[in-house]
Image (cartoon, rainbow, N blue to C red; front, side):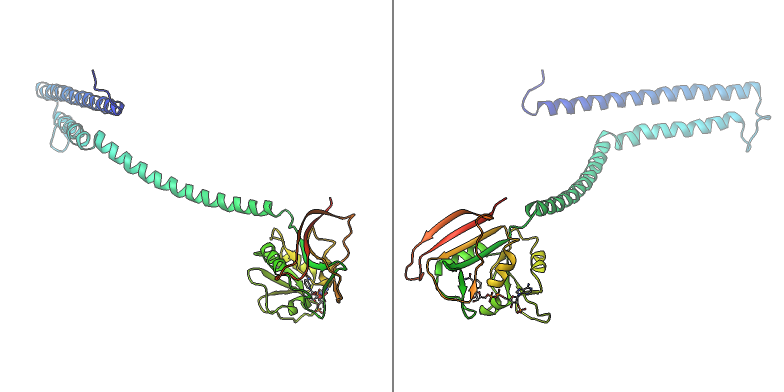
Length: 300
Ligand SMILES: NC(=O)c1ccc[n+]([C@@H]2O[C@H](COP(=O)([O-])OP(=O)(O)OC[C@H]3O[C@@H](n4cnc5c(N)ncnc54)[C@H](OP(=O)(O)O)[C@@H]3O)[C@@H](O)[C@H]2O)c1
């Protein structure tokens, strides 16, 4: 009975392979043995027949009669057969075949791995491009503003209040996105907003803005930002007015004061917009007024 452990099936397979190999070797040696006796018998008969019937004169060829030619040819065949049995089969036997197979399998595996890597790379590119196009079937164009109860957003091209938490709120929402603004708003800021793609709209064809992309229409600005999931329109008054029709969301900080100014947020039409969230905050030493964060989404 064979010793059984978790490798027993491997041992059995190896033993079976060895037995099969041994049987094959015995068979091939037997065939060679038979070949030798059969050849010896036929060649001897041929030589005797040649001598007895004295036919050599008729079949002479290169000074040798036919029976010697037969002997030479057959001996060559027999030599090849012997070589195969003792050399080729011994040194190029099962082990050699296994090694060759291993080499071939390894080569194939390397090729398969290369093809797999190539396919994975292509699949990744396709998946990414699909994800990209799925992610942004349409950008969520968002107006973001802080307006008093009488819709004032600025005066003399300046902001009119200090609301520290509103600035944080603005930064958090817009970080990493496109921020689209009018030329006057851009000029009211000390520099382009960091960590965002700044886009400035102007009618001036030769306008230059440091660290910002300059365009000449709202359409151009939105086209630039079409691959952004949520581009923000950040003001001022003229630009909000221009964009509100095409926007999908408004992030409005309503500052609970009535104030004088010269730039305004457009009147919100509540037939078109619905409030989806609100969060009231109270004034403190960092925030001059009470204010509420409202989110409005365009009704379907
Ligand atoms: N409270 C807030 O949330 C908030 C946010 C942003 C800004 N603001 C305030 O808003 C005020 C600025 O607003 P604003 O209304 O005076 O100016 P703005 O909207 O910032 O910029 C107006 C400029 O945009 C360009 N423009 C407007 N319509 C255009 C069109 N159809 N095609 C091409 N270009 C166009 C023009 O630039 P050119 O003249 O160069 O052609 C125009 O002069 C400031 O006081 C600022 O502090 C407040």
